[in-house]
Image 1 (tube, one colour):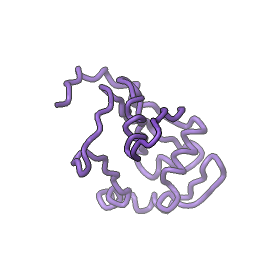
Image 2 (spheres, one colour; image 1 turned 60 degrees about the vertical axis):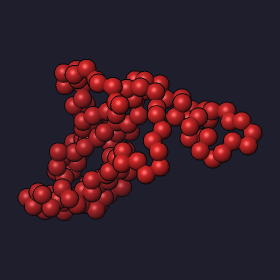
Image 3 (cartoon, one colour; image 1 turned 180 degrees about the vertical axis):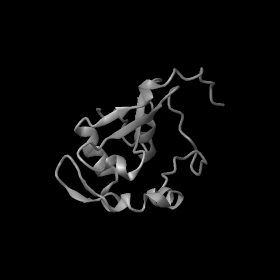
Length: 139
């Protein structure tokens, strides 16, 4: 994606504003991937699942500084605390398609998921869902 042109002397925030102006409605912003358990990414049949997609429903509207609208990443350790039965699976050996190896508890993260996605080892759950309800405008 080419950077949008900026006028000479534009403030630093002008770049972000210009970039946001290039995001049209229905633009796919993120695909969301997950694994059902540590065991799902162990072994030669390891797969991740695309469970969702973040799509722009309108032109981008910048939020003021300090806005409460944020995305918060959930730490995988929080999941482990909720699923003590996963303890043994976290010790299983995993090998990513690029050949890097380790245990499910230590090595499975965004780089590991990226390697599975790049290798086409993805189950697309989102395509199996019915169409979403009509979106309501954000005010």
